Length: 231
View 1: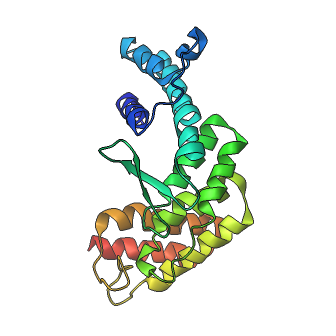
View 2: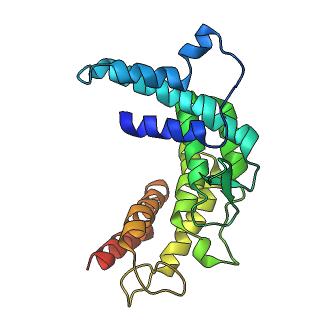
């Protein structure tokens, strides 16, 4: 994310139903706060790329360390997935299965990469483990749910269980490929292809499956699917 994206994300999280640590801050704590860092960013020369990078990295760290950690510990429970904030500034949460609930584990994985704190891996496991193939609602079995949860967790930790669950889901999409249509239908009962989600999610997920397994069926399906929906 660029400066604008990070500042916007920081502001959204800051006003999203809570302010982290309302007690008076020490000068040292103030210097580490998101608002202090945002104010610093506003004062830099746009051409000073070196300082810009330092402050962007500092902002990214503070965002995960202060805000995302707080949401994971205090605002959502396992089985709940934060989606957005509503008018009363509380979190609107979605349940499992839902076609987008892989995004929250994906955010937590990024937090682990930035903060390098094992607590974030505990968060990831806590919200990733309930994500399984939705037998009762096949349309909720989307690549987004698994690419940003089990697949990302495997990439970060090489945990076999996450790899197996992600590959099981990749097999699901290989089997869903419809040779008559030439692509993977967007849903079980809908024979249309949606360019944005399928190209952005299904193809990268199947390519990930090919890279970690070296099984050519994933590469072949990804290629045929991409060609099919571009026609």
